[in-house]
Image 1 (cartoon, one colour):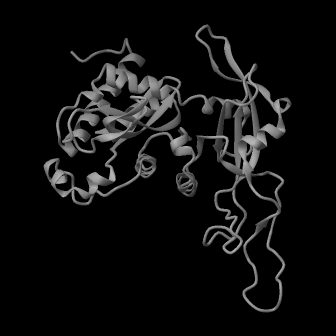
Image 2 (cartoon, rainbow, N blue to C red; image 1 turned 30 degrees about the vertical axis):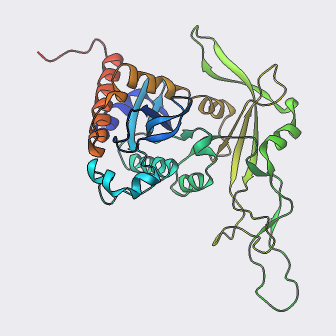
Image 3 (tube, rainbow, N blue to C red; image 1 turned 90 degrees about the vertical axis):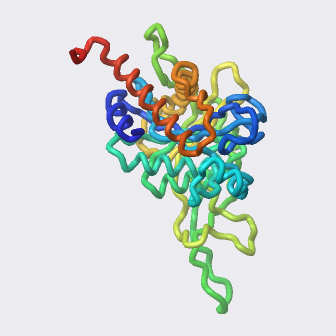
Length: 335
């Protein structure tokens, strides 16, 4: 059902991005599948709740969910009694939120829906495994990261070291000529003079909304090890790391950037598109608000694993129906 809704609605909304996120479902008691005291962005604190991971296509004309996954904490995975009571399938095992998210993205990539760059907050952007998996799957991404994430600046040289002595295996992995550095430090060195004013969306009055951004080409650094006994790239990685975009928003009146993003979009991507994608993820908050406030996403009171998935599928169908009605308010109705 979720696939049918996605394939029907996604082309209509002119999807520009896929947003990977998660949301909390406050719960009482301990019998709903996956419920426990855990941090929820919905609550803004640690509370008794379930966590659902989702991927949504986001476009100029609306949004549509592409998939849902219920996060099952490790203690739930090991509790056979609670698993039996909530009918959790035997093959379901512990997976992190990024693991659940990438599976949803890869599944939707096989559907007949327009492909688009994947957006996500720090929890996903700072997961280097997820970024690698997306890149290897041929998926574009633009993900939020913090100022402590490390990169190599663009003019870093990578070369195979000269062999020392005649014994032992000759070096074969490229080595950088400098250490990686936090992106906050790199952007700070570039300075506010490197910013450019970019329009990233239209305001409510039709006037363009602008901000100042820095766009720099860098190399991914998470495969590098500082330990000299094991220095080199990850096993099997014999080429320099990929180039990526580093994006920083540095608004007027601020002493330093407010947000940072990493992206594997092509080197010729325009600043306007990079800035627009970077600032598009906020639409997810409106999506969750509608799904919960108007369509009852968080109203499921059953205690069945499969029931939760049935509920999210029905809510997705209702959301898709309302989106099509809004886009085509005057279409002929069947008699």
